[in-house]
Length: 136
Ligand SMILES: Cc1cc2nc3c(=O)[nH]c(=O)nc-3n(C[C@H](O)[C@H](O)[C@H](O)COP(=O)(O)O)c2cc1C
Image 1 (cartoon, rainbow, N blue to C red):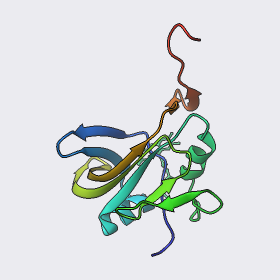
Image 2 (image 1 turned 120 degrees about the vertical axis):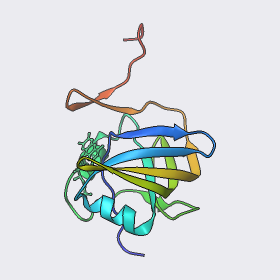
Image 3 (image 1 turned 90 degrees about the vertical axis):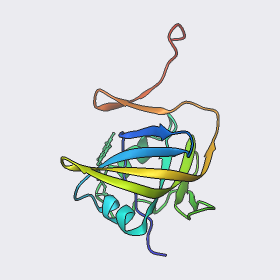
Image 4 (image 1 turned 135 degrees about the horizontal axis):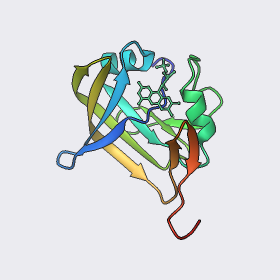
């Protein structure tokens, strides 16, 4: 198995409950997209509010994005599961739809885990913590 690869995405959405599916939109030419298309699998790590440094790291062009961080191969597909992530899904690529300069990659989940906590929010070109109205 080679070096794991990954990228920061905001374009992820739930798609289907039965079977459980999600989709992500990845720009043509991104290295991570090429690897996903070739391998037919990917993982989604939903970052927690204290993981903005990882979002910055995975939005960069460096080739060793997983070096120095704590992660483990997922138990169904071996895709990276990052320590401290709020939720992780392992997915098999079931369909890729090209639209404009992006591919819509549809994945069917083979495993998922989640924990209680608050998600990292990207809005207005910056990272934010989510605050429930009335508690700010
Ligand atoms: C907050 C944020 C959200 C992003 N969302 C997406 C996205 O949804 N789709 C995409 O193709 N790129 C997105 N990007 C850009 C990629 O993370 C960036 O191009 C990355 O360097 C690609 O890595 P790679 O070339 O190693 O695959 C986002 C970047 C940031 C900072």
